Every structure is written in structure tokens, then in C-alpha cells.
Amino acid sequence: MSGTNVHANDAMVRRLETEFREKETFANSIIARAQDAERDLTEDEKGLLKETRGRMSQIKDQIGDLEDLARVSFETQNRANQVDRAISEMRGRRDNGPVEYRSAGAYALDMYHAHLGSREAAERIEVYHRTAAHQKTSDNLGVIPEPIVGEVVNFIDSARPIVAALGPKPLTNATWYRPKVTQHTSVDKQGSAGAAADQKTELVSQKMTITRLTGNAKTFGGYVNVAKQNIDFSQPSILDAIINDLASQYAIDTEAEVGAALAAASDATPESYDASSQTSVAAAVWGAASKAYTATRGQGRLLLAVAPDVLSVFGPLFAPYGPFNQQGTGFMAGNFGQGPVGTISGVPVLMSAGLGAGEAFLFSSAAIEVYEQRVGVLQVTEPSVLGVQVAYAGYFTALEIQDSGIIPLEAGS
Image 1 (cartoon, one colour):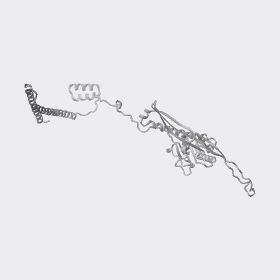
Image 2 (tube, rainbow, N blue to C red):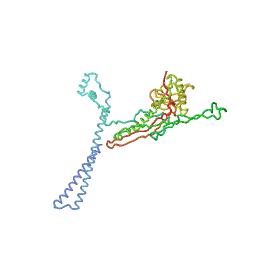
Image 3 (cartoon, rainbow, N blue to C red):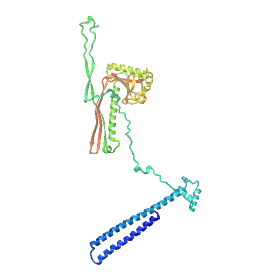
Image 4 (cartoon, rainbow, N blue to C red):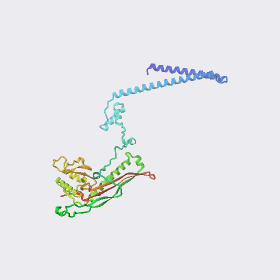
């Protein structure tokens, strides 16, 4: 604030203070007259006092504003002077980085010079002893979040390639029967040669025999008892994760049930192959296809189911970029997984984790059937312990129709 403004401020303050004292004296004189006469204030006197009090309040407010203005002006001017001095001081100072004394003597010499008044020595001593507080995340664990990123990592493959290829049939009863012809009728030449001389000779006759295969529903399922708090406070949802995992385990177990049914078939003689020869593997496939046709008379589709380790043997033998006359379309390691992976001599190859190590079966889809009814998810609340029991179940059966239509392929010499 300039000198002229400062003087004007002071003059106005003095004027207002003088007027304030005059108003105060005037009010006291009105009160004194009433007191001397031992009477109350008249209405005119009350009006004068009210006007006087109002003016005194205005004077008080103005004096307060002028005092605040003077204080702010002084503080601003003082702060500006401090900043100006600091800027001037920093302009004349060089930043030499951290101070490192080469010896104890050099440190002692700076201490001595600083004691004598050397500004440079004092600054070096100050920088040397200055220790900045290093704040790390370990000092602020209360404000460091612990986020859960993405979905739950769950390495599980719930594909059912064999079940999907066969196509589950509806399962509506605990026990059911599948009719199967075990003896056909017979047709032959009349007589010995069917010639004119054999006329009136009795024709052959054979009854048809139909037996039945028995199917029994098998129950697959599992459950977990989950605390309600675990359900309410988990993110991602623990209930969804448990249900999905139960459903996946159901799929894995039912696929393994079909694999066990294929392995239990014992009527057909296994076809052996040389694991190092494409020709040998193709020959085994052809031989098994012949047996499957003989057993089922061409009913159904031919499928070749292999375990993961067997696919790793077959794959390199049938390259996807081979000559046109190779046996099959070839396999690609990039497509390694459950499900259709290629063909050998036109037979679809299914890789299934439901088969045991080293197992491979060529079979007709007419030789084995699967039946299924999924119950799905069941939930019940336990109020006494504030828990939720969640279950997943289903009825599943693999029914062998013709054992001889299931031919194992085994690695041999």
C-alpha cells in the first residue's frame, strides 16, 4: 500500500474514533438528564438513543474494516519482501548437488569456516545434515487398496466330446429296457438249389428272437455348504464360482463314465499299431473299422476316441501340410484340446480327457448309447448356521449296445 493510502486510512480511523466518542458522550448526556430527573426515558429520548446506537454500530463496523484492510496490506507487503529476498538469495546460489566430504578434515574445516561466518560453508553443512523423510507404500497401508482383478482363474476343461458326439438320449425312468434282436429270421433257396425241381419244397423258417438290455440310472452329484457371509461379501461371487465348478466336475465325471464303458467292452480283439508308423496306425484304423461294421452292420457313425497322450503320438504322424496321398487331413498342435481334432482315413478323431492313459477306441455310435437327465442346481438355506447348501446333480448312464462294435487300438511293436 502506498504512503498516501496509508495516511488516508489513518486519518479516517481518527475521524471515526472522534465521532464515536462524540456519540458516546451525547448518549450518556441523555441518560444523565433522565436519571437526574428520576424519570424514565421519553419516547423522543429513546428515538435519539436508538439513532445514536445505530450510528455507533456503523462506525464500529467501518473501523473494523479499515483495521482488517491495514492488517492484510501489511502482511501482503511483508510476505512480498520475504519472497523477494528468497528469490534474490536463490539466484546467487549454485546447486552443487549432494555434499560429500572427502575426509573428516574437510568436514571439520567447513565447520570452522561456518563458525567464523562463511555462508558457503554453512550452506554445505546444512545440505550435508539435511535428511529427507522417505515415504513408502509400507508406511501407508491404510490407503493402499488391494484390488481383485479379473475373473477367478480356474484351470478346468468341462468339454464332453464323446458324450456330445453320441448325443444324450432322454432319461425318464430309474430303470428302462432297450430291445435288441439276438436272432434274425432266415431266408434261403427253396430246396437245395431253388430250381424248378425244388418246387413245392418247404422253405426255411427261423423265428426272430428279441431280448432286452437293462439300463439303470446312475446319479452323479456333489454339494458345498457355504456361509452366507461368504456369499454376500465375496467379489467375484463365490456362489457363481462354486456352481460353475460343480457343473464342470459333473461334466468331467460323466465323460469319464463313457470312457470307462468303452474300456469295459471286451468282445472285440484289439488292433495293434506301431506308434512310429503312419501306415501302421492307418492300417489299425482300417482293421477296427472292418470289425465295427461286422458288429453293427454299418449302423451308426464311426468315431475314433483317443486319450491326450495318444493324440501326442498320432499327431506328428499326420502332418497338416503333407502330401495329398497321406492317410488323413492331419493334426495341428495349435488345436490341441478336447473335441474333434482331425481325421484318419476319414474317421473323425475325438480327443477326450475322460479316457485313461494310452487308451484309444474306434467304435460305432450304434454300439454305445448315453442317457441323461440333468437335475441342475439345488439350493437350501440353513437358518440355524446362516449357511447355504448348494448342490449340482444329474442322472447319467452309458449303455453298451454291442460290445464287439467297440474296438480298442493298442500300441505294439
